[in-house]
Image (tube, rainbow, N blue to C red; front, side):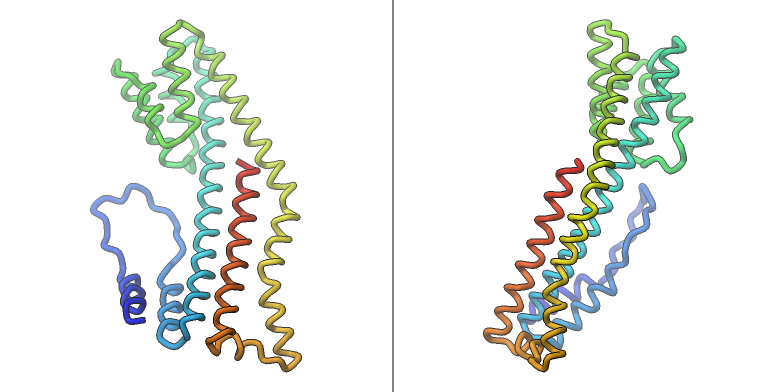
Length: 251
């Protein structure tokens, strides 16, 4: 118990400020959540502590996963736009270094930083006679990696790069369309999964209205505490598993 309190207290200490902040993003504040957890640790039984940790951990995972998926979709969408600028400049008879420079200047201000930075570095390196394709291949954006590989293949075998970029853009657009259609089709199953996740809470509330006092039983330790932890674990595991299945369907 003491070790749990020490760990929770350590989590409440603010992080040291970095010497150089690469990007500024809006993030959810973790201190209030950790403060609630610390209060539970101070006053609640072990079964309540474990259940609270499972619930909070699941919520944090769901938030992070949703943000990661949204960011991946944004990167893919902006990559398609970037390829459109590249294709237009290549059709005009310019080379890839010039096309990259035009694409960087044409990207919107809300384009993800990892995409902008990778393209900017690749444009600068290729404009100076370096290997810009390697920069794209080493980026964290999977679609940019593919573009870099196509660039290398085109340079090695003398294949027109514009045709390869057009195929890459069509593939990205098809994936975006499929993901959007799948997300729309999964709205019903997502709502069902959410309802099933909160049904145990509804059942506890109905039991309290009927005079059974399930909270006293569940929070009293012993068999009730075991059932509380088991039920919470199964509910959170079912929620996470359903979200992972639906997430894979849209990827």
